[in-house]
Image (tube, rainbow, N blue to C red; front, side, top):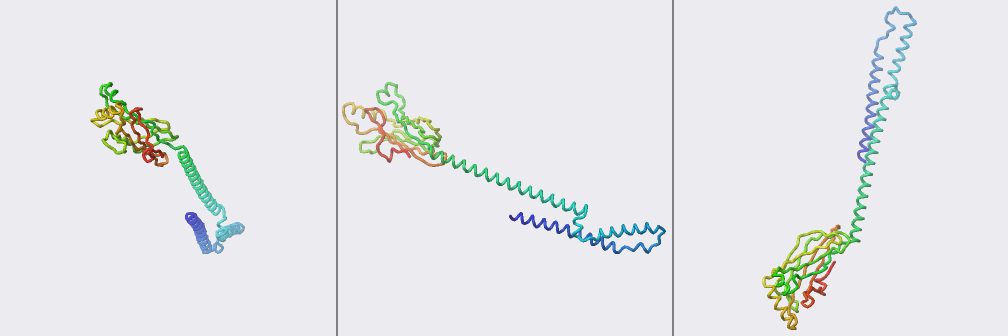
Length: 282
């Protein structure tokens, strides 16, 4: 609103300046007219009729020059032209102000529309969230006999994860560790450990994470346990694999999925743990 007040003051000052200058010029003209010597005292050989006509024109011109200032402002062409210029400038200023107001209104409307669009997008993502699930964990090969039949290949644990949600999941951290564990849940020798780089999974996308076995004596260790089971004994220890996956949705909401699987020698597969602190999904 400050600029409007400044514009009004400038407009008033402009009109007042025009009035003042016009009045000054008018007063100067009247003074000059009054100071002229009378031509009636001069000798003239012109006919009396002609002299009277000249005197009438002079009086009329003098009246025009000495009219009040308020009348001069409406005089043609000076006064009317001045007002025409003032009105033109006023219209230009008004149109500029209206254009600026319309531009601000458009900008505000665009901003509000963008805000509503963003809120709708966030609400949609919150409703149809991503969800990382561990579909399966596998040992390859599954037995020492299969390992030997393949010609001593590398032992590998395959962790299959899937985005079972409806929007993109941005995985920030993903790590897993495998180790031997006894029946009292005490951890023993480490089998493998790995951390994978961040990535994004689209809805329904599957990713297979390979965890290479690093234990140099894994074959011999495993054969001892398998031989004991084949003789009818209970396994005193078993391979376990556990890990954690943290991820965000497009709203930046953080979630985690944890898993713990225990290798069952009889079924030759990893079985999910019943511990909610290690096997969970936000």
